[in-house]
Structures are given as C-alpha cells and as structure tokens.
Amino acid sequence: MRIGLRVSKAVILIVLIVLMAVVFSGPKESRETFETVLSKTQEGLDLSSMPGQDNQKIREIFGLDPESFSAIAYFKIDDVMQANEYMLVQFNDKSQSKAFEDAVQKRIDEQINLYEGYAPDEVQLLDDAIIDVQANYALYVVDDQAAQIHEQFLSSL
Amino acid sequence: MVFNSLIFIFCFLPITWILTRIVPTTFLKNLVLFIFSLLFYSWNDPFYVLLLLISIAWNYLTGLELEKETGKTRKIVFWSAIAFNLFILGAFKYTNFLLGIFGLEGFDFALPVGLSFFTFSAISYLADVYKNDVPAQKNPLSLGLYIAFFGKISSGPIAFYRDMEPQFQNHPMNFTLFCEGLILFTKGLIKKALFADSFALVFSSLATNTSMAGAWLYALSYMMQIYFDFSGYSDMAIGVSNMFGFKLKINFDHPYSAKSIQDFWRRWHISLSTWFRDYVYIPLGGNRHDYVRNILIVWFLTGLWHGANWTFILWGLYYGGLILLEKFVLSAYLDKLPMAIRRIYTFVLVLFGWVFFFSDSILSAFGTFGHMFNFMNICDSQALFVLVGHIPLFVLGFLLTGELFDKVEQFCFQKGFRYDKIVYTSLYLIGFLISVAFVVGSTYQSFLYFAF
Image (cartoon, rainbow over the protein chains, first blue to last red):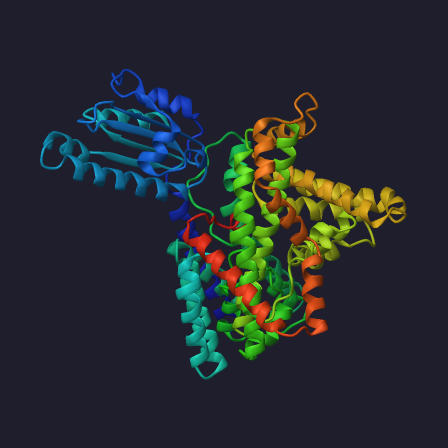
C-alpha cells in the first residue's frame, strides 16, 4: 500500500514535470522597450505612406481600449482605396492577446468584405496579412513589405 | 468563467443546480458538482485543469500516506507535500518576478486562475490531517470537490478543510439556505456590477491627474472599487455555496468601519487572515516568542501572496509595521480616542495602503503620494468634474461600506413591518435586473482578485 502510494505520487510528479515543460517552453517575454521594438521593426523600410494614428482611431477601427495595453501604436495609409496598415502592441499580460487577435481578425474580415469585387490586389494583401503574437508583444501588418516587417519585428524582441 | 457573466447566471448556475437537485444521493450530487467545477475552471483555459487535477491527486495520496506513516517519515511526507504545493505556486506565480530581479527574460504563460486559493486550500487539508484535527479523506471525490468547488475556486473564500469536511457527507439543499444564497448572490452582483465597476471607471479616469484632489479621489475610488469588487465576489461565492447546501464563513465584516489596523484585518479577507494565523503565525510561535519576527514574516508572506511585485511586499510590510506600532506604541492612545477619530485614523491608513497595492511600482506609489500632498495644485477642472459627477456614487458607496444598511435591514425585519418580505424581495429583484442590465451593457469587468 505504502509503495503503491509512493509510486502513484512519483507518476504525478512526472506528469507535473511534463506539464511545466510544456508551459515553460513557450516564447519568452521580451524586456526590450516598446520604442526600441517599434524603431527596430521599422528600421530601413519606407513606411512614410502610413502615418501614425491616435488612440481614438484604434478604438473606432478595432474596438480595442488602447489604455488597457502597456503600449500600442497603429499606422495606416490615408488612401481609403488601399488596405495598408500595421500595428504593434505590448501586452500587460498574456490574457490580452486573445482580445487583440480577435479584434484584428475581425478587422481583416471586414476589410476583405469591403474590397472584395473591386480591389483584388487589396484582398490579396489582406489574405497575406500577418498577425504574430510573441509573448508580451504582437504585430499585425497588411503591406507588401509585411514579410520584412515581420522578420525585423522578430529580431527586435 | 466569472460569476458576473450572463452565461454563468442564466445557464451554468441553473443547469448545475437543477442537475444537483435531481440526482438522489449525496455522492451523485458531489459528482455533478465536481464535474461542473472542472468545466467552470476549464472554461477559458482548459489546459490548467490538468494542474488542478495534479494538485487534487497529490494531496489526496499524501493524506492517505500521512495516516499510514509515523514519526520522522510522517514529517518528511508532510513537508515534502507542502514543498510540492509551494513549488507549483512559486513556479507559476513568482518565476517571472525572480527572473526580472536578475534582469532576465520572463516566460510567456498566463497565471492559472485561483492558483493561490486552491493551493492554500490544499495546504489547509494537509495541515489539518497532519495535526490529527481531521482524518484523511478516503473519498477522492470529496477532496476534489473541496479543492475545486466552483463556488470558491477562483477567488476564495479560502475554506478550511476542518469546516468543510463534515459537509461533504451531508449538504442538504433546503429552501431556506437556497433563499439566503440567492439573496447573497444578488447582493454580491449589485456590489460588483453597480458599484465596483462604476468606481473602476472613476479610478481609470483619474490615472493621470496630478492635482491633490484628483489624487485623493483616485485613491478613494480604488479603495471603494476593491471593497465592492472583492466583498461582492465573496458574497456571490458564499451565496452560490449556500444554494448547493454548503455553508462558508463570511469573508468581510464592514472593514472600513474598523477602529484600528488590527481590527481592519479581523474584518477584511477574513479567510486569508485566519489561514495565515492558523498555518503560519501560530506554528512560528505566535506571540509567545519572537513576536516581532513572526509578525513581519506573516505580513511579508501576506504581501507576497497577493502578487509577484515589490509593491505588494511593501504593502504587506506596511501593515506588519502598523500592527507592531499599534501594539507597542499607539494602543494606549487609541483606546482613549473617540470612536469616530479611531475610524478616521484606520480609514486613512488603509487608504494609503491601497496606494502601494494598486501602483505598478514603488516609484509610482510615491508619485501618487506626492500628488496627494501637492499643495501647489489643490484641484483642477478634471478632478472637480469627476467629483461633481460622482457625488451620489461616493456617498452611497461610503454608506454601504458601513454598517448602516445592515442595521436598517435588521431593524425592518425585527419590527416586522407589514409587507416587509415583499418590499425586501422586490428591492433585490430590481437590483438584480439593473445589475444584469449593466452586465449586458458590457460595462462589467473581471474581478480584481482573479489576478491573485
């Protein structure tokens, strides 16, 4: 009986170790400041066509509360005929990433509905949109330079 | 899942209650409750239900081991099991904090909801069995329900095993207890949806205000928010437990009417204070020897329990220091003061404590203190606007934190006014409907103590 109890506890211990290995093997939080990540993500790219937008725009377009995040920056092209935009966000905690991803996905779907039928290039850009959550940071980008922006984002963390 | 969500109020709670009511035996009732508790816990993050099951299984087996072992082996079994529980708590709650101290990158994972609460419940079980206060639980379902019961898993109250143990064999779901539970649940929902969330809006609107009045309002709004939030949650938790035939002790007893800091902690989060008293303070020696050391250890741990941040540790030590100060210096003077002055003294010191508690960093806390005594900028238009716009909220909030409401309620019932039950029920029904409207209007927020 005693041995049985000890063996059972050893099995539980192993299960705990496996569970913790899964939890702790995820991406690590970046300690880089938001400004550093943003500037490194933008470095060497011509993104002047997408000026920064204020918090009101983030609320309007994504329905997100910018104050709830540690930091957030949103850039969008002024031309309504084009879908180019990108957003960088730093979370206060991981639970915020789900709301962010849902809001961005909703935005992409709405944009696709808007452009479908008359602007196939924009739809293609939106289909290739990148949403990447890396621990305490996330990037959303719709642009023909999306892959490069994403690569710089990853290396900036 | 949270208590103040429509899915809980209108689906989860009634379905669970009906099923529990239908099944004939206590065993089946407990089985239904356990299954639904796992569902409740896994609602947003199914992964961590595995951690909960690990905790239940480990502590169940340890209980059986403690009954079989004697002497030194028993001691080793007990302390290794405590270490196991604290290891889980430490790994998930404090790893990133410790890495941060050394400037290292933290890991990316969400804190399991209610981890501190169910770990403390588990430790309560082990300690009670180890001290031979209760026999080890032979039925894994009963222990599983004690640790995982959805009525208390997210934010307590931390139910003590010795109090819960007799109830697993018999928790009759009678009408009177159900009605008491329903009233408490409604009271909690009103506190949360109408008051806590409204104070939360005031608090967030004043976050950047630097005037003296603004800073005081900022701190006061948090003080009110956290009381209505956590005591509201506790009311709902005790109410839900009552509906299923369980009786939990009260967790709040008008803490802002306390007449000293020590009295405050007899009234605020009573289950946590009692837990630390029974399982840390008394085993350390209580007031028999090394009183100062014991107090400081307990309050350091109380602060740390609330979160992995220096601000929480400072908040805990602040209370430890105040309790020592009262014990050795102030008690003689406090006893001579009029009750109103003692209450104001406690209220103001507790208010200062919340500044440490809600601040992101110690620097930010002292920044807020700086604004609270910024005589160069007494008031600005924003602070005035917020104050004028929320006078009824603050007045009602202050009245409800005190004992007035309960006294009026008791008076009406004792006097046995005509139609008192109809009026009473109608008032709660109206409060419930308004609270639900607030929940539907998506102005609701999660409970603050979920983060702990």
